[in-house]
Image 1 (tube, rainbow, N blue to C red):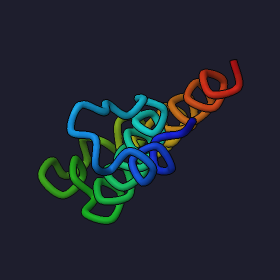
Image 2 (cartoon, rainbow, N blue to C red):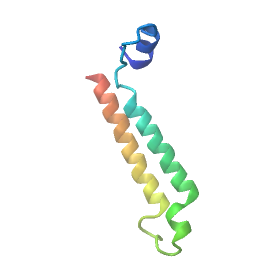
Image 3 (cartoon, helix red, strand yellow):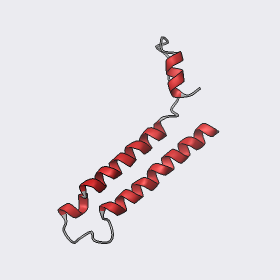
Length: 82
């Protein structure tokens, strides 16, 4: 049984521990949001002018974080499937 229905059905049981199925999706969502914030704030380029013109700029960091978050979602879904 998934996490949210399990919490609803076992709300009165103080010893019920929900499964960890939802945490990969939460982690992936947080990584998506962090990547978007880094991209919106232009973090490296703002503080170091002309140092991150091709490699290491916020757009590159955003793409890497999108891939990492997608992997979290993929392996979380694969875990639920099995």
